[in-house]
Image (cartoon, rainbow, N blue to C red; front, side, top):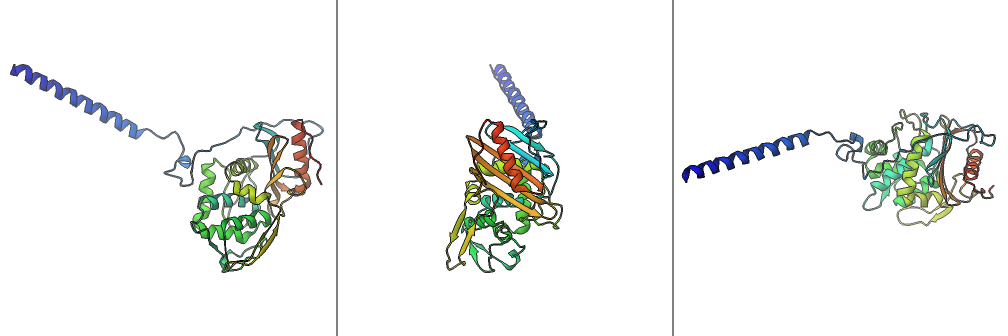
Length: 318
């Protein structure tokens, strides 16, 4: 009996050792398995990965040989119907170009992601840069929403700089902008400042990347749509800041029915740039123009053309 008992104990020990070895081997293999995601999409490697919203549309041009296709001076163009998920118009949409104040779309996104708990953004003398301004003074403090109005209605550089310096600190904020670009799959975009000024380094994007960024903005950030589609707003004086009366200077907001923003921009290097978001006739359309000589008229022609291709009569506009 003792012999059988000893044999049974040995059998259990061998089974236990085998199971232990099996689980250890599997655990070691699991630890060595590489993630299918690139580091730029890993929360561990990229703190700006909030959730995976990885949208990379495939582009294919068509209608280009028709006589009614708009002829534009812009260096790069992309018009995309979000509703039907298709390209309407494309011209060198993968070419890297300077983006001017279109930069501020990403500035707004990162600022909203990293909103201060006290919602208080103090203006410093270092923030007061550039010609585009709403007239802020050092020592004033504004809310995130108030600064977003300044960014989208006046392309206010001091508002963008104030968001960057107050949210994370300027250098960390710029890093967050580039990390966010990687998280969205923007392979041909680089930021060197929160305003779009040239001269701070190699700052560039493509119309394709701007499509991905703009779609992300209109889908996830109602604050951006609100600020960029507001025609005028009066911010009364408080103990923290002066009064501000702002009117939307963005092209087409008041002249093309259905336009909801987003952003315009200009520098001598970038030329006239414009990202427009249109909701009309049951369709949501994003149009992007880089390096134009007449962005206003060209965007109107592109929007008209886009609606006609969907069988929709464009609205009367000026």
